[in-house]
Image 1 (cartoon, rainbow, N blue to C red):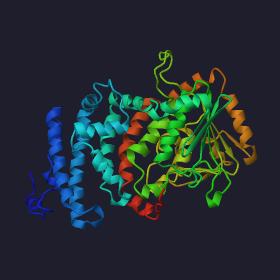
Image 2: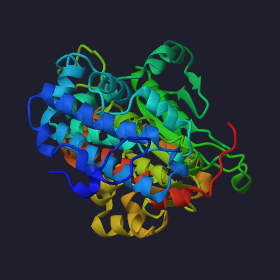
Image 3: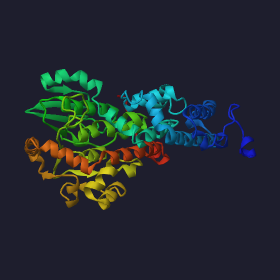
Image 4: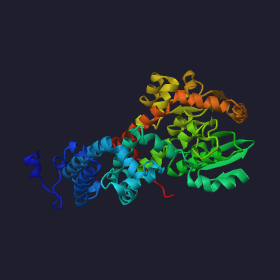
Length: 456
């Protein structure tokens, strides 16, 4: 029953929308066709309210509160809709799971087939043109949808498998790479030498801080290393920097590019989820391709080594948790300052506790503790610590040691035991929504507002 006082609240542009106007959650607990229509109507009601209001930065507090209440009510409907209909929705979008769609393709298809469930590409394009603080937060709706898909024990594994397929860009570059053993992208260089694919992160101007360009380049590079039959082991290291504070020195990674986040250039689907379910997950599980020996193992996978110079901050430290052997210079350190930044450090919460125990993971993730390579607790992240000048030789020893015939099989079994696919899927389902909520948290917006974005 609607509250009489709600009905008397001032309208915006003649549109009367409040949280009380939304249908009850039970309205989603019906057949798919009826639930789809009811959700579309409720979502359009909110869109009319948003369209009649000024841009987010110019809204009066009362208008902002009304839009937030109405949006929250419809988001509750979307969540219930996915709780009830996730498998049916996914089957419709993928032709009964006969078609494999990557996340970006999936959310775009859902916008067409299920109006009001996720934002349209046009809505997302408007969002991408705005700084983070000036957005409507439409990616939260993508997070609700993807959480629903990943929660499903039927649809979720299918989506994860789709994300393990090689990218079209990598497939296009593969013939040249297998012939020359060299590919250089804007942010990653891949070179094959003696059966090893050496990946060098070379965003020298920003200390290898990750943005969507680097995620795309890294997935391409990982795909190439895995698909080239002449490669037996992959190795990752940071290149030399031109940044004034580290000029001429190698740096592993400074984590997420906060300038890009402030400028609205870090997306949920294209960065935060693609990174975890794309190249990082491929390092763990490999790439899924058609192969004669599919019955032996469903993916092409290989051992990986990481070498850390200077520091591995945020996403850099997260990366180390999936490598088979990690070497660090004795003056290097590691940190996961995501809680201080206000966001979730990817799958770091899932993996660090398994590697170092609950106390260390809480100290690092919640308390912002910095761990130096020479500390005993660094053994949760690092296998070998050497003097900076000895890192090259240590890396060469490590890639040779991982080329034994039984290494790959044992690596697979270790990964299954340490990171069961079903547990990873359930974690990523909740991450999809929690991270979407966090990147629009007021505390995050306040912190990243100190960054300005220079033209690319």
